[in-house]
Length: 221
Image 1 (cartoon, rainbow, N blue to C red):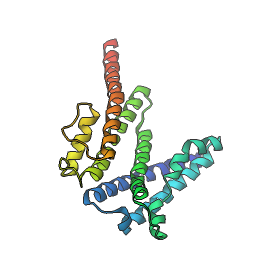
Image 2 (cartoon, one colour):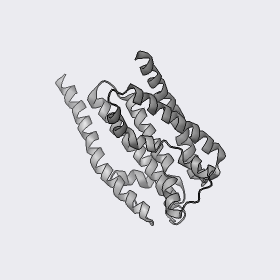
Image 3 (tube, rainbow, N blue to C red):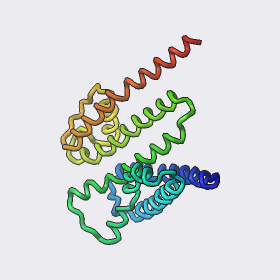
Image 4 (spheres, helix red, strand yellow):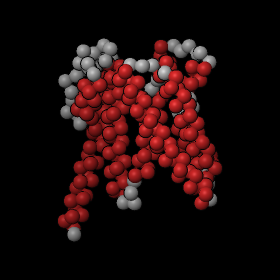
């Protein structure tokens, strides 16, 4: 069992390292306006990273005391670890505009899963501090990926989004519920407006609670 736990821990860190590369790829492809399906190097990297994800899931399944409970809890992560883009490219599958729109966001969802792995790796034994780290990483990752999606959708049609930095600024202001002077032109942009504002309303009060808790501890000493 110790050997199995060591293998799983090693796989987790390999997943984190590979996924950092995925995030770099996603950012580069997005900013350069390159389609994932047209980049052979990216497809190759993503394929082997998906294989690594699946191997990690298999070993975790072997170590799980309750197999069906593990499957139920990790089914979504299993589904997004399938290399859909590689299958689409290999079999020359033609997708409708709507389906293509959904599929090209799958790498971003997978990267979000990776960030949850990173969160688990840095969580400390202090429960309050651990939760603060989780919420901080969740907030930062949400702002970053929402800004990428906003840039993809709004840049071609919205003169207020000339570059990625404008999209990032929009995401930061929306998450603080202050609001940005950049108006959304697309349905996706408007949906992201709601998501980021709601997330800001939920998460920022938690930061206030954490800081208050630290100050209370200091006074207690």
